[in-house]
Image (tube, rainbow, N blue to C red; front, side, top):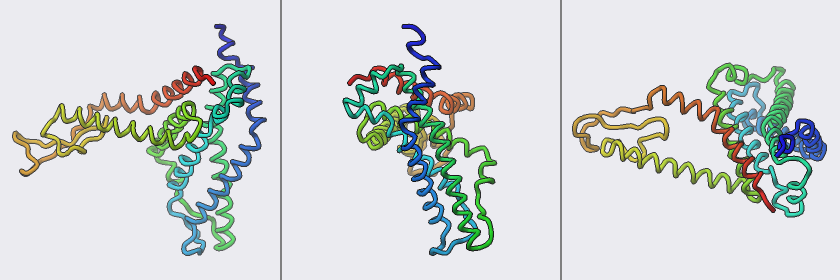
Length: 275
């Protein structure tokens, strides 16, 4: 197969432009609806018995809750045309490679969504701030600026991109009830992972485990110390963690490799898709 049959920058640009032209009304309405929903959420958080207060102590939880919920719902609607046979045939036979089609959806559901969400959140913030000024004469005080000065919040973005990749993979596999099916199967996967980790923990530590749930997969395990540990005798516990070198390697894998791997699996599944 020739390289330009897999990816052509010019053809990708034309397909991306066609996609945006065909869906700009939907994306515009989505931005408006998202802004209104965020405005309502902020207004409910701002009011105290329907009395507007000039300060919101915690905007960060609402910010991330809105980003996760709306982002996953938005991604779950990807490839919905494959649920309809005529539309699916048109989509698969359109003169662009599957990689170009997949990349366009990936860009829209990641960078595109982030731009829309932050724009909508900023508009909602300006609306709430205007309400606060009109009622109290003061601008709204919140924790947004202070919170983003701390590093740990970046892990919420790692988690969001991971969840988006899981949802995009589910959208390729399931065109109907994507969100429900993906969340259900992913929950089953996590429970199986936890169960397997429990079996390995019992295999290595046996009776020294404090309890069946005294472990956290890929992090560590809580064990009883002493020559004859027993749950009925006075106990001394210690949480054994993975060596720092192994933990750092797993953290690097989770942060930078798992999400691209899921995106790649989604593309491979789409490439093999048939109607």
